[in-house]
Figure 1 (tube, helix red, strand yellow):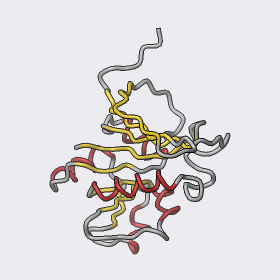
Figure 2 (cartoon, helix red, strand yellow):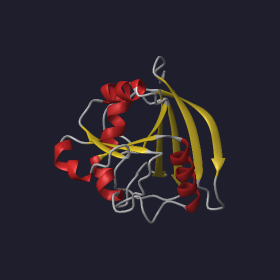
Figure 3 (tube, one colour):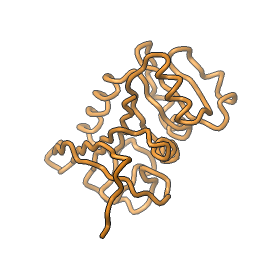
Length: 180
């Protein structure tokens, strides 16, 4: 399965200030809308869900899955075929989705969910939008853990006059970065 991480970050690597809303550019938001329209599954963590749930526009073409340690506590919010809650590991979840015929999905955060997929070597691509700002504090794309994973830059796009950049990478888990 192709698993695409889509995130927006400040130049200093922060993804929240205090949330995504209000600081990402219109061009990044358009890129995100395009990505959502192209993929039938969107995975997010519970904290990300809590941040965006008031704005979620559910539809029968997109399955949103929220990873949480307590899925039963959120079952009243479940919408069959559109919004699910699970405590499955990323590998188990991906296997289940593949058996249902899915071939791609978006991973949209937060940092703990992103890290869980990366640890299991499941993320195949990253689209990272870099907004020209410094926050100093906030969450990062991944929780702070030692990583040494090589990325290959596929494409760079300047999205606007302010200098917002869109970077597309693929991930190679067989090759780690050499620092020598």
